[in-house]
Length: 309
Length: 269
Image (cartoon, rainbow over all chains, first blue to last red; front, side, top):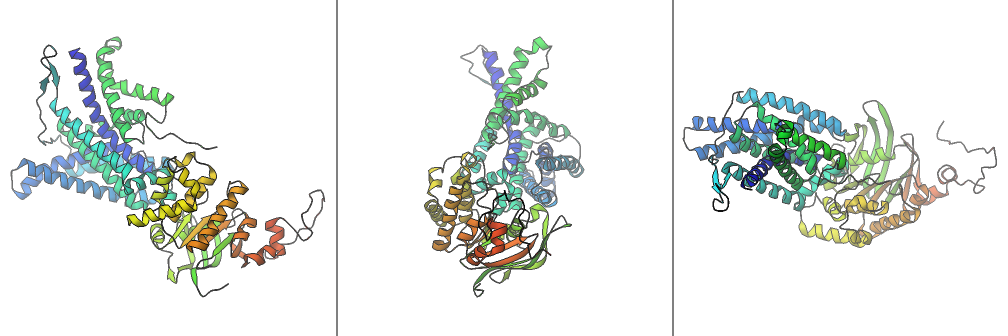
């Protein structure tokens, strides 16, 4: 029992981390109807900026404080993501108003390659570390209930809490604020939104900035776990089954999808893995997503595809 | 037409799509303050393009005003963004309704008030829309995609009203609606015009209804204005009767009379 729970918790926390990345996809899709292939590249870019600025800023300004360095680096990296959002809107999205979804998708694919290159050109292509003071040692809990207790990674726990807070904030933003409503309106119908005076260019800058923020948080958490390197942009691939499962348009869906994938992966590896000769953690999520596409293509909480005839 | 109190003055505009397709070939029209003006004509005549030129929504369709001027109260507006125009009080209701499918009716309406920041004003506008469209109030919590065509059209008009416009560009409000609903929608339009002093520029294929509710009409064909006049005199005009209302001098024609001589469209040669 103790072992099962330990696996479960591990899965839940890994799942939270997946949802954090999935969130970026959902944000942009929800607000502009574009599937943003560049989300992974944005995570890498943001993490690189964070790691490097945290290293450079104390050198430039000549101080030692880790907290201050991280804080400044976070602000600078966030500013960079906003500038990036603005540039993307200016050079790319504004030229593609009212184009097919597939055209926009291809554009984000292009952005993704460009960002991968740009990030490594600006910030170097070594492996860097982000140290934001995440607790590294695991904790034992419930030692009285189970023999030997449960081993919980404190780092994952903190990360899961951060993502939960972020998600709650974003869900509120989308449902309750006028800007959030405008974002959802733009996702439904670009042109109609434009016709009632919602300025598309500003909305896009906002949404890409918010997605940039999500990418930065994801980048920091994943970066402090795995180190900042090119492979960070590939964790985005893990977010694909998450958004398929949860629904591309639902913030809570991204969370639940992430949890299901996280738990499913870990449990299947432990309990089913031996039948397949192990290693199913790597592909389990994709198979699950594939099955979901057959049964419920809009995902668990995605907006139903409404067709009037 | 009384030209002393012009709200909108479109002067000889030419619109080109994709740098090649010349769609409007010098269209001029005027909308006086507080009136309903109709643009009539068949498919592809240039009605929608004219409205889009005014509301500056052409860019998304790769269209461009290449000649002529558009003035709102004497101020040139061709280079303003759609959102600036909404702020100045000109808002378009697009053809085919275009409600935000996944938002509720109320959210749709509130989205229409994006350019208004004053909370009290927004609440007052919402109340106003609900008094003019009581049907919307009963459907306020349903997603727009699940409401009927008539309700969606009302939602689209109501959404436009949420920006407190002086002028609404209404594109084919009758499209796809049952005749009874069309009357209902037009009654409300007239009401808004009389009570709220909103001016309307309306593009319609349903000539009969449009002429009954408007003050002035323009008939477009092939990107040109071919006829204009008071709505009443247009409705009495023999050419209009024959080509747009489907009735000729001798009353309704039977299709059994194999050979009938159509009047020539004099303006075509």
